[in-house]
Amino acid sequence: MTNSRRFFAVAALVAMAGVPLFLVQAVAQQLSDREKQIGGKFMCMCGCSQVLTQCNHVGCMTSAAMLKELSDSVRGGKSEDAITQMLVQEFGTKVYAEPPKSGFSLVAWAMPTVYLVIGTVLVVFVISRWRKPAVHKVAPAGNAPEVSSELLERARAQAARETED
Image (tube, rainbow, N blue to C red; front, side):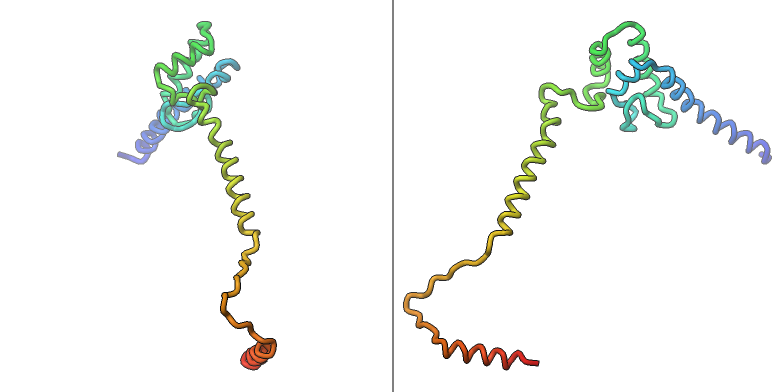
């Protein structure tokens, strides 16, 4: 194959690879405000982990199909709840961009607050324990003799001599 044929073959492949991207962007640009608002509540199911209306996964035919289905439903006069139910039936609850604020999903909304409160209480408790003085009074032994002040002075003098440099 000559260099010019290779160049045209590569150029054709690059052009064909870019067509799906332009189609997805064209579909996304044609969405009305209501469609964007509803579509922003759902995830693209292609595995890119992006919101449906913002999926920029190259060649993503899943988002194009989902956006077309969403657009057809909105233009057909379906309510937001009906569209939501339709997408949940088709893809399951993983289609939600954020969990609904009802039922068991409330746990997902409440747990960050609960963890913050528990963590704060734990930190305050640990810091308060660190700040308490660690001095423990030792009770004198019952039969232990007292140390005389003379003996104490001799011990201090010896310690001073031994630590001199």
